[in-house]
Length: 474
Image (cartoon, rainbow, N blue to C red; front, side, top):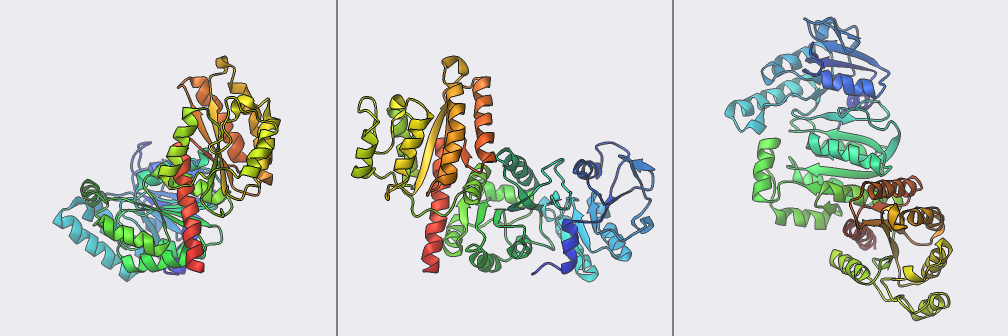
């Protein structure tokens, strides 16, 4: 493990000091104090400010030296001009773990910022400081009840996120709970002057709470080490990576954001081919892929059975899946014959995609069809598209009534089963029904994707991971 063992307590600190607490409710480090308080943190909180007596209900201390114990974690929210002095105070107090929210270093592009960054590295090395940052949001740890992004779920889950960006990290940790996904940690590490992405990745390799890893990267200090780590870890714990800065515009943004030198697309394409990491192109796609990995068993292939839709909509769904890299195989003849015993010919298609809604008299017919299709050897994954209409159209309640039997089927299915939603209007009630449907499925462990496009791409990434894994282990 690359991280110093003393860093372990930073994920569940018994005490936290905040350098840069303010008399203003939203000033300085108060946002971190407020966020951690909202997490119902049970440890000791020590705001530091010589001119303030109390911050958000906590007694304020004039200096780090005045705090009655050595904090397990120090959050530094002071200006860049005070950074060196603040780190020296940490060393003098015996502190080992520091989250530097402070910005204004190499990412500025200014010579003075670069020089200051070098001095910070030297101080950290001399004082054996474990620094997260600078220029970052820090750590979300449900078991430690700490978060820089306000109140988040306290349940520990199997997903960890390593993010160079605090904004993207915050977006991920807010999106994931809407699908019932829980996390072990989220680490926003910014410029990564002392602890880099590879240090956190190496820690997560052996972390018992983590089974799936997401990463947002702009630049990497040691590309060879990253390749070796991901290659070693990905067969045991899937690693999903969103790489920023692959275009000229993105590279310029990365340089000004975290001071990172972003790599060329060809180099990273080779990295993904060699490492076994799962490549995604957006944060939404990362959430979707992780949902599939967490909730679905390994598929036997990439053949998808598409159920739902009529006429052109089913054709469009088939095109979407094919473009994403999935197969849409023709249903076996013996299975088609079995389906025709209760599904009439008029207005239907049972070859795949399945256009059968007009002949279904109720949920029992859908389940019967699903159970028959589940036996077809050409099918590896079942994707059901559920159409959500305003209730005034007479469809809304019918869709929700279908959810419980589908959940029961999903739990007994031999093959991965998931759902994509499609709304024909932006009606408020339609969105409410879609969210209700999503909560019902995800609570039962059934993946739900907001669109057919997102489902297709996530399923392609998920199936390709297992195909690649099989090839590597062969």
